[in-house]
Length: 204
Image 1 (cartoon, one colour):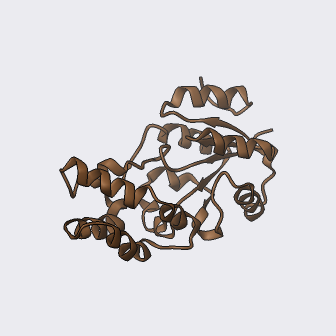
Image 2 (cartoon, rainbow, N blue to C red):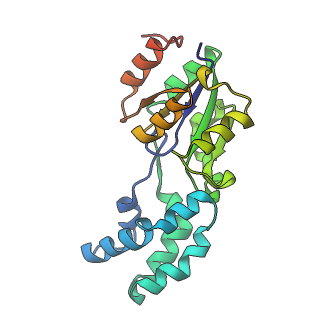
């Protein structure tokens, strides 16, 4: 019996779009590609999600790889990229209904430590019982350890949880541990239908 609904954050509640962030600072296509590759496309970004580096730590090494004309953009992007992240609201009614129907709601996301400053902008989180970020535990999805630590922190049984994530590998990792899930592609109705088939009490 499903008692807990677990959501990812990126591409579910917020739009993580590096090209959109970069567009606020550069218009030249080659410069934009350089920034995307050297800032968002290297393993250092994963290190931030792991909590082993911060945005401030990345400024110097990224600038060292790029021409000086892009150094200002690098600093601004690293320190302020979340200011340009859009919040999605299409799941707000579903979240409110789930909470009203007695389900516990949780967030399980790969994100750097700086995300704690941003979550207040996601209005749907007012209904949530807990949030869990990769940087705080030094594991990232789909590593099974992050799921185990998540279950342990909130005293949850995997078979009583349903997980929604935009990546199939993350959903499958949860499924291997006993947590059913759904790969979310931006539309509420398929998610709502899948939840109902899993026994979750929702209106059609």
